[in-house]
Amino acid sequence: MTTEELEQLLAQQPVALLHRLARGRVHRQFRAGKRRLIELLLQHSGHNRAGLESDLQTLIGERHAPSESGSPHIHRPPAIAHKKASPHRAEPESTETAVSLSAWLEGIGVPAPQPFIPDPWQTEALSAVSETDVVISVPTGSGKTYVAVEAARRAMEDNRTVIYTSPLKALSNTKYTEFSKTFGPDKVGILTGDRQENGQAPLLIMTTEILRNLLYDAASGEIDIRLDTLGLVILDESQYIADPERGVVWEETIIFCPSQAKLLLLSASIGNPQDIADWLTSIRSTACRLVRHSKRTVPLRAGYLHPNGKLTPLFRTVGIPYGHPNQLHPEAKRLFLEYEDETLPSGRQRR
Figure 1 (cartoon, rainbow, N blue to C red):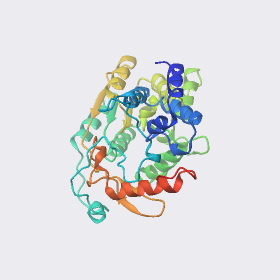
Figure 2 (cartoon, one colour; figure 1 turned 180 degrees about the vertical axis):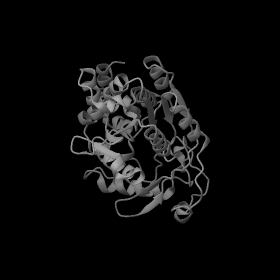
Figure 3 (tube, rainbow, N blue to C red; figure 1 turned 30 degrees about the horizontal axis):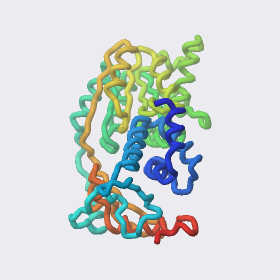
């Protein structure tokens, strides 16, 4: 489906259906009119076009599906549904006892100190990056930074320059402070559009755009001596390669990166890491290794903080019950309805 066809299909739908489609995709979607909703949905489609089209077709099918009585089944938007109606009427209400707030908060805090032992995937990644390019795809909190720090340490011990890139200036500043404490301020420099310090240091922190520009200069003959000794390039948050606007920067950085430098791509959210590794293998001088780890070291808990300061678990369980929308916590559902009542335009309150 082309963008124009998708836009036309969206325009044909009632605004209530568009609001349902926008939930979870568009921030504060309930304040947007139909034209603005369509614009925002089209913008979001760049992140997951297939998912948007699939959900749209599902909602259209539900809207036109006949009910048991033979009349069309009408899905009323939650904004005008009866207050006691479940937000997911198609799902049976769970009979499982909902977790209490105290039980949900139990165990959250700083863990007791204990000796650090690298995980097998971390050892594998460090061994691989000494020989070839590596793509690391592991959940948030698993220890990607440990691999980056140790790989940088080994490269500098071998008198090689290391470049660490991030997509944001703020993150680059944070890493500059962090790595200065780890390696010493004389060993770390930073190059961003706003800040240039210790530019001849063996470990340079910069945004990906700055590195791409350095590689452009090298390709045009303006060789920077740091590239002659470059041994390792770390691309943090490398899922940005899929960004519709900035992804080309990551692609060009990888393409222009000197062959003697090893590439280390870090991400917790690349959807197709094997494809990325295969692409690197096809354009670089050595085969790229994918190091993948799926077990989440730091468990996730989802909560809901109402603007009035009330905190409640989002789900009936301590963890996140993926694929079970009927597991919403009763108190969270009550607060959702309360917030909707408070924010709906005058005259559209639930009756």
